[in-house]
Image 1 (cartoon, rainbow, N blue to C red):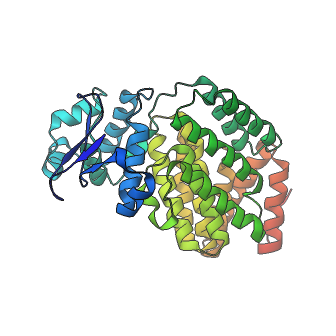
Image 2: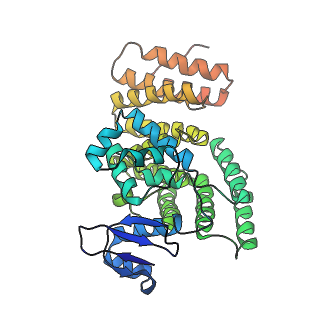
Length: 379
């Protein structure tokens, strides 16, 4: 396999053994078979990130894509941004027929096309394409579904059982798992470990959370760092790991970095949610995390805006346990801003909890209002 390039400004082709397959990419001439990952890191760290994604995502015959799903997402992104095909051609030189083929799911786009459209839409389309892979292993899909339900319900009592299931499956399939599947199973194992400690606020747990997040993300992106996180292409699971990492950074007083990560996660999860119903509760969770971080920074106007967006999204797309939290956060932020209607939002939060018999959370809300704000809610 070779990267072919004549100079820094021209466009080369990355080819595998199938002559009909190519992805346009711009890098120096190099025989990849003569290099290991360390050599590539020394040459160009960004190149390693992109090559690993391409090699693991595009170059394996067992991986195939739901191109109609990807095309539908790209179409909705273009429609929401009110960008015409004519404007795209003016900005990028991409022919309208290429856009039509992509949006109708007729053809896998070249990396060159994806890069240009990503710049126009200000969204990482490779990230979204990576989530449009068809999962061939039903066992892995079943494990993922169980872990998703457990994490959403915040039920950690079965963590060890699920970790054992992952280990047993990996041992049973040791010769039959693709690299992609091995990475996914490894990241799920780390994710389960994080569910046990992510809400603990002692220094040891905070630092261990950061360490485990790094280990998990680096299974797919060996050079991952917080300062260069935008250089990579993340799956939904990796975005969830980044969200947990942002909470760890917040607790280390790295507040600006934490908010930046949370904004990135929210933006990309929302695009996944355009055609993936499973991503919608994760979008609300990302809204919740971002609102909390902005509240800690005393950015109360932004808290109100984010929570109102979340309520609109949750009401339209998903009935969520997070909704009373958003009403509560708006009420408290309005109280800080001395806005007279703060109590209306607190009443909505309390009323929602009473209606759904969320007695434990109702008690927490009442105690917070009484101790911190000297507000007593009538029974």
